[in-house]
Image 1 (cartoon, rainbow, N blue to C red):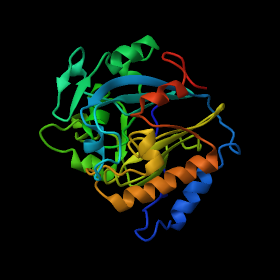
Image 2 (cartoon, one colour):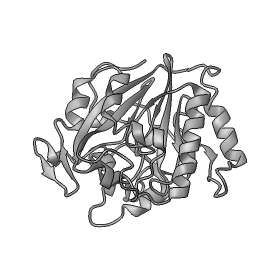
Image 3 (cartoon, one colour):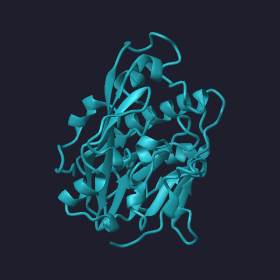
Image 4 (cartoon, rainbow, N blue to C red):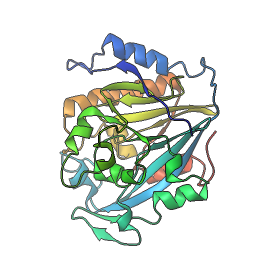
Length: 289
């Protein structure tokens, strides 16, 4: 696999006033909308992986700061990861739950966590070894998205700058990338991952300080992976902001931008924690082209 240098697409600091956007953001959104106008030099595909699941014991209590915002009681959510193949380059988007949870039902207090197969096991089924992965892209710092990152120490890490700093400590999931000479792209704006506009990590802070979503411009049509911009379809419909988000104001602004990109590109939105969105992409091991 060729190694690559990830290029910064645009610095996109969200304005704090009334959902306004900077000139850099407007330019980035215009670029994102041009999916049909850009030819793809490399073949692009997207494969969904099962990186675990969870039963939230009280969905409304956990995800809402207003009682009754969602239906009360337990609900299952997915924990999905994605392999994007760009020619002979591979991007792994998010890394799911800790692989030591495989075969267990781990009670984490507000939720019960499960892992059926590890990332390495699923990648092997499509002929990919951990050392084949060129880039590990992390939507944000939470443990259900970073749990298996350390399986890919040779890859370049793409992560929000502040999220990378926040994970330092005893349970650091990014130990391999703290070493001298490690390749880390600390993003504080949008990132054109392969340098040709085909895959863009969108800087959408609010859930965490430098949270990101991913726009993938497949030949069959763009796909927009949510990260944790939303955790469910109801959250998207109601613009629900979890009480543990780092900034309510930034979250709402990022939701506005997410919806603008989705509308302008005509992208298929896949909410990564939403079980009903699994069927929007081909079943593993098939890939969307």
